[in-house]
Length: 389
Image (cartoon, rainbow, N blue to C red; front, side, top):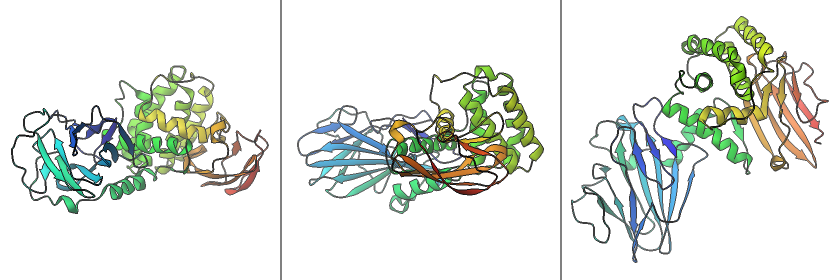
């Protein structure tokens, strides 16, 4: 399931793995069906291929029809009070018809109320013709139904995806073109977008998730001063019960909170957090039972850089997984010790790894979980060759 919406919106939508859309306002699900020259194809039973664009809330679902595909794309825009845009592209050599199970859609022209032959659909469903190699758009309002909407003038799926990437990469920029690393990095993008669309977890139900979620929103551009009064008590609560939480989540929360406090100009509070972490860093449990957005972000970033009890940052503390070896990647803007922003780029030289690294502060100590002989030696950047065992 993918969450689609706009940042700070009152409502959003979920898109399931069949491309069906459900708004949080309780209105009926929008399902879709396609008729080619032979028969109707229904999303719930057809063979579909689905992906999001770089992990952003832009969903593309392909349905196989006679001679090609009909491609459905879903994204949201803030225009006209918020709209979920649904675009269909006929990538086949013949014309098709697209049936939609809601008639209250914003369309480019009036749709006649008529019987749709050959398929049993809910009352109020509509059918729209789609010529070969052409596209059409409809939209679901996230608020009151607007008037005078020019659907063709709305931002495209690619434009919206690029906009989301620009936002999520303000927290950290994770770059890789090859699976499985690219997939893991896209999951981080998706998790950050989910936080922006849906908000943070309920602090009463998930205090550590709420802490990490709030930290992420500050990393994504929200005012740190607004969040400090909420985040610091949550951190105290989570550190006081450190043995109940996964260690990697605590480590991510501590590094992130130092970043927030440093951004707010609170160096003493940064040091206090580091001291508190030094007292409990050996506690906590391993693993987790669920994968909410905050867990996804923490797991990936902690595999890239973690802060130890002595306030040392460790690149790749778990080493390099076997399925990551031989793949070049970059990570910038990670949460390092004492609120520093840290990044590195890894390039393979045979069986060993050449690394370019940078830190916003030369005063923090950095080491490597790949090559224990390396450290930054009090410098803010440089390069090294890590011997990979």
